[in-house]
Every structure is written in C-alpha cells, then in structure tokens.
Length: 97
Length: 478
Image (cartoon, rainbow over all chains, first blue to last red; front, side, top):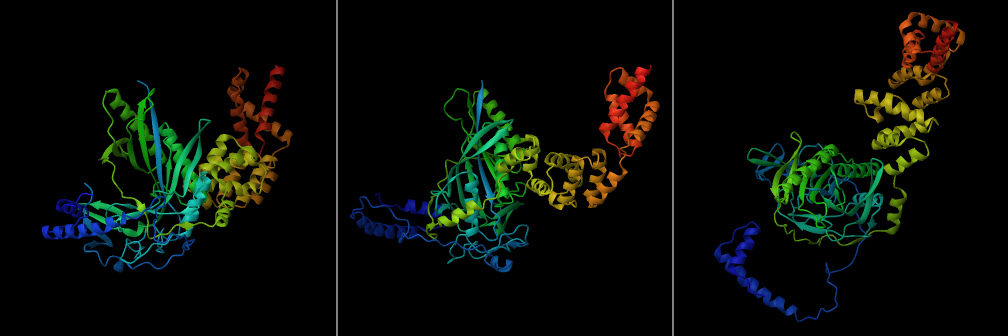
C-alpha cells in the first residue's frame, strides 16, 4: 500500500467537514503510518476459505421490540443542543438553492 | 422514428405503527414540531437502535400480499450520507438483504392483464422534515425514524397509464392490508419514477431521468406522459437525453429540472453493526400469513363470481375500501346484490359526493339500505318510490316504516290507473301523435306525466304498458 500523504489527510478531513492545521495533518500521517505497520502483520494470517464476519460474535437474536410508545423528550430538551431555534424548529442556513 | 418507453417505480410508504422503526418514540402527524423525538431519533451519543416488531410484521404482510420471497433473517445496513435531515449521518436500511424479493402484481388495463415484477421490498427509516424560507432551513425531527418500506418495481411499465395503474394497485393493497394509510397527498406514500425512451428496435435501454415526489395518481400519469414526449423531442432532434432528476410542476403540467445526477454517490454501505441479524420465528410468519385480510383483487373476484356484479361495478367498489366495506355489510342483510350495487353506485354515491361524505360516516345503516333493496327486488315498492325513500333513509330515517307506508299507498288497481291514463292521453295529444308516428320515447314522456299524477305510487312498467295499450286501442277504434 502506498503511504498516506499529508494532502490525502487534509482532503479526508475536508470531506468529513472539519479543518486540520498542517501540524495536525502531519501528526495524523505519522500515527496512521504506525497503525498501518501493525495492520500489515495481519496479512500473514492465512484466511483461505474463511467466511468474513460482520460482527465479532456472529450470533443471531430473535429480539424484536414491542410497538409500545414511551414518552418522548420535551421539545425544550430535544432542542437543547440546537444553537438557532424558532417556533420549535431547528434553524440552519438554507441547504437548498 | 418510433420509440418505446420504459418506466420503473420506487415507492416509499410510511407504516402505520405506534412507534418509530428503531425507537419507542411515538409516531404521530401534525403535532408540535420536535415534540415526538427521543434520544435515539436524535442520535445522541450512547444510544442504540432496537427493531420495531410491528413494523417487521407490516413489512412481512406487504411481502406476502405482493407474492414475494421472504428472507427469514432480518438484517440492516448503513447508508452513509451527510445531510441535516439525518441526525445520525447515516440511514439504517436494508441494502444487501431486503426482507422481500421477486414479487409481482397484475395490472388490468382495458381488460388486458399485464404482470409487473417487483424486485425488492425493504425496511428503512424516514428522515426529518425540512422546509426552506428565506435564507434558512427549518427542521422538524418528528418524522425522523418513522418506519418506511421501499418497494422497487422492475422497469416493466411502458406508459404513464401503466405507472399510474401500478401505483394505484400498490396503494390499495397497502391500504387494505392496514399497514399504512397510504395517503399520497399527505406524503405517507411517495413515489419516484424512472423514465427512459429508446428507438423501437433498440435492445439497449435509453438514458433515464428520474421524476421525484409525485403526490397523486393523476400526476403520475401526466408527469410520465409529459416526460416521454420531452425525451422523444430531444431524440428526434438528434440530441441526447441527460440523466437528470426532475420534479413535476402541477400548474404547467411539465417536468422541470431539479438537479444533475452526480456520478453515482458512494453511500459506503456496510452491515449495521448495532443490530445483530434477527431470526424470525417461522410460526410467527405463518400466523401473519394466516391473518392476512382480504385484498382488493380477491374482493374484486368475489364480487364478480359470488355477487354477479359487472367488471365496472366491482372495480369502482373495490377502489374505495370503505365503500366496499359498506357494500359487504349490506350484503350480509340482502341477497339483492345487483340492486344493492346499483343503488349504492348511483343514488348513494351521488349523495356522498355532493355532501363530501365518506361511507363510514353515512347515517343510513347498511341493514336499512338492504331492506330497501329487497323491497325493490320483490316489488314491495316501485323503483320510482325507492328514490324518495332512499333520500329519507340517507338522512337517517327508518326504512321499515317508509317501505310499509309506500307499499300501502301503492296504486296497483288497474281500473283506477286506466282512468288516469285516459286523462293523461287526453291532455297530451302532441305526445300521442309522436308515438303514433313511431317516436317511442313519447311513451317515456307520458309515463313521466302519469308518475307525477300518481305521486310515484305506481309501477312505471305497468303504466307504460297501459299507455301503449290505450293508444293502440284508440287507434283501432279509429
């Protein structure tokens, strides 16, 4: 695998909608490279004929929740993390043209 | 050049559950914004989803009604995208293992039956509702997490008419099942339609466009027809159709540009780690199947076979579940099925339409209406009398008394009628002349005059016979 570059890290951060300083990006590259070194060790394991697993314990359940309503949050609580609210709505900059 | 059209339909339908797909927050409409949400719907840290049993039951019932193969292991996947209507940053859906596969419905158009295959039915969650005003977007999370089923047809329809018929069948089926209120105008059933056109002899499908969020059956028809003609115009001009997303503008009847289809968005689907695979109890599945209600198609066939109704009558009745429920209640009290459907689809439906009354709100009891139909069938009352009786029982009057007094007031004495017939003939020489010169409808006119004189208390068939006899007799006497 080609080494991760600082540019790629910045691009990724941008896609995930947060900013990184150049210093932080360099730090991320360093950490990622180290991680990758460990992960390549896994390649030594022979997985021929082994089905991939989705969960660590591939156990199925039969649980389904009964359709019985519980008290929801109050509007005030529901919006307590919202910076801009108006008439009970969460308000943001217009997302469509 | 000659073209052929290919249409595929995706339907999203909100299930009529009490709680959300993955949380116990109540589902309700038209409530105060952001008052029907809990920590799971808002994706607060540390919360985990749990699957609504009723929603799974409804999805299974829908699969059964559409004759689908059911996957007895329910699995969910994550569809990642970042948008404010989705607090988690992903939607939980069933990308890799839909609960239902390979179903079908039959369209009936102008007496021709056509099979439309259904590729998949899967469960997912609805998003928050947004509206945009000025420079702002307003979000109400009440809708976030409401259980949805998505039903994807094979691209096998070939006109706006077929697409409309397909959606109508699906809507009716889901409504009869009781799994959704399936109201397009309120958004509990929404549909997106893919349309493409290609030269008649071409094997390869043409470039398709997608029409979003159509909110009525008639708009589906109009939108597809318009889009087909738009695409043909482009191809005829030697240009290429662009793969765009469109919406239907009701006022102009046109499809208008919404957005370019980005090169396919990567949703980074992967199995939902927070919900383990759920094995459904085969006994429970069997129970759901055994308790499926009568579906529209079954009801239609029953009306044709058992009640001897016409295709038209059966079709109109079945299209409105409550109307045909009312009809069924009547039929529990009468064997005069034909009379019952005739009166229901003329007098009663007219009354309902005029007053915007739904069948379940009729004051007239089905048993009372049945009594009247029986009285008409065995001629206890004449059809001419039945009309005024119907008017009264529609307002809640007791049918039994009205029928009895109508029966008493009937003029069935031929001698008494013959006198009035002579009178009417004497008063209307023009009509008599018309009849003599071969205009049969003059008899209808004279019968009408007679009905007025007898206050509707005589049998119209007997009257027209008497009139004819009387005129013929006088002719011989000449």
